[in-house]
Length: 427
Ligand SMILES: *[C@@H]1O[C@H](CO)[C@@H](O)[C@H](O)[C@H]1NC(C)=O
Ligand SMILES: *[C@@H]1O[C@H](CO)[C@@H](O)[C@H](O)[C@H]1NC(C)=O
Image 1 (cartoon, rainbow, N blue to C red):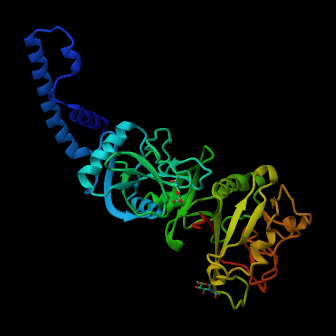
Image 2 (image 1 turned 90 degrees about the vertical axis):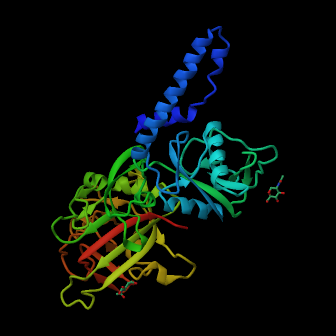
Image 3 (image 1 turned 60 degrees about the horizontal axis):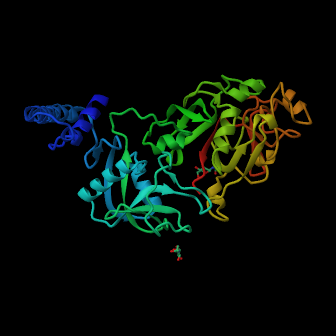
């Protein structure tokens, strides 16, 4: 792979005029001829070898151009979209809006644009959330090189485009419709990209549910990703399917680090440290809860299914992983959008602001909620109206013991199965 890239670089650098420094030296004509001949034949050889190898290894998909300067595949899009839609269009191809970290890249980009494009302006992948922030590249490269033209930096605008004719950059309103260029790694290059959650893994084009590695706060964690429920990208933090693994008596250490086996057919808790980092890295995280069935004998809800969505985060271990939770409405008063597991006052909402408790670390002022009713590890304060980590076979059914959930503030179920999953809020 790198051999190919070097050969291609040689190929691009081959210029039939010999290097300037030779003319500054006193050399015999035959020596110059030898150098020219040598350079030429080297170039022809490099061209042939480079061509043959390139054909097999540098594999940009159709419609994408390999750039040895970017060491990426680039694609010029002559459709005009606003900034967010342009970036979304690139992401669809596993790419990002192009970034520029040097004048070499800029020259190469302008060449590629002039070869394929017809627009005056193209989006660059530079943006900032508000005028108080610094610009950053959407692909995470360092924002060190800039080339704003004179008077082209308007401090009230939050996106950046480049003018094909001058290669000057301008700040622009992000709603402007511009052509754009996407850039992505060559399909044969293993991507060193680190992901922070399953949403980012999905955005990178990986669509199978399964176990993946994420990096959060400099540490790597294994996670289980659900790539199908409600458009996918969910990091699953809890799953219970049966009584094979007991949750209520796991200690603080286990709740912190996680326990069980990741997979779609197993019981597990992903770990409070991971959940803390996952839910505090974005301004807003959604918790989705899915509940299947009720094991209480003669229950009218035996085969019912419930789901609910909340805004959710948990604090640091130094504060005993306190819970922050509230109802999540996708639009004002859209109660249907919040699911049918919640009444917005009982259930998990009841534990808002509460510290986590385990058998060996009880924060509940009424300790028998943990020791006798077997409701932990959970956010417990004088017990609770819902805990999905309680004892699988409760002391009593339908009555607030063990693994249970209060639906609609009216009746308690003891679910057969439960799942909790998180995702960055999309608004
Ligand atoms: C900057 O952009 C804003 C919004 O488009 C515009 O009203 C303002 O006149 C611009 N300022 C300058 C100095 O061009
Ligand atoms: C809750 O909502 C889901 C999907 O909207 C539906 O399939 C399910 O039957 C509902 N549950 C109850 C108990 O009404």
